[in-house]
Image (cartoon, rainbow, N blue to C red; front, side, top):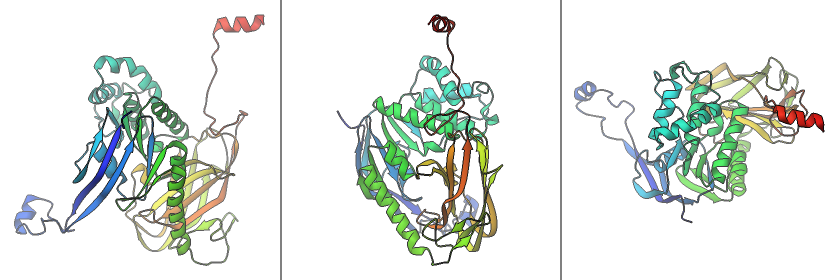
Length: 416
């Protein structure tokens, strides 16, 4: 069986221009065309080679700026390489910028037809799959409304549903688990696994090394545009995590234990890590640290930075007592960013509903260097969250559900 994706000695070079490059023709003419030429060149990717077979998932991990998204764009033919080449055998489905191809004035239904036809389906095929697409996206009541009236989450759900229902031979995924709430993310994971089992070759970008270990047959770690490691997911993810932890621990200053505002003792290199150039000063779980499964939850982080820190990342995860991560997100996963922080500030994560099974969990959170190289402050298993559920079940998720039994089956059960 031939490989679905073949990448050989791939390289992509970009130009870096002067910070005061003219923005208009008039400015360029007045400046005598000065500062129009690039100041320097840099390689976003260099010497990248790998293959992905049908029915296989390659997970790519690495810090921001490592070249992950650029690599996905080159595989998806969005841009041309400056060195090497890429060969893809089969139709491509790309989850690079969810909803980017939607037109706000068209309805959800109209956008489904436009985007699915562009992806290679016939109008008849789209019509046949429309009900499944809408059902998966959970937009039956909104599918005939203009997309400009949709929330970001609704748009992303519909875009994801369209792509996965085109049944591509090759799927390129950039952080698919940032789509929707925890319950919908689990559905996305199941759909990705189903496509893989049906023979789809998948390249997945993720900041979550544990996710790569769970989903992928092989993994690749990109560092500054080059391959730092490639092979078994457990080995590659372990190397990546070890490097990040090592850098963070080296920067963690010695400090006696401190009490958080809730009375929990923070101990460096035990439940607290980071250089402490920026510090998490308080964390609040609203409406409370005990909720019912399916309830909304807000996580407020108050922080203090004694100096200016450019483009920090804020990340939050929810884990069980045994350390298994149930949910993980960051502001960069939602394509948000802070230009800088200094002094006191607050940032809040709003979860519309949390469909986790009844159990004890922990909220873990941190402030990270802009490229995820290390943490300024990271608190692990400090803030407990108790979720109650009237449904006794094993497993991680507890989504709303119902059984339906036909009348014939009910009659048969009564006779028995």
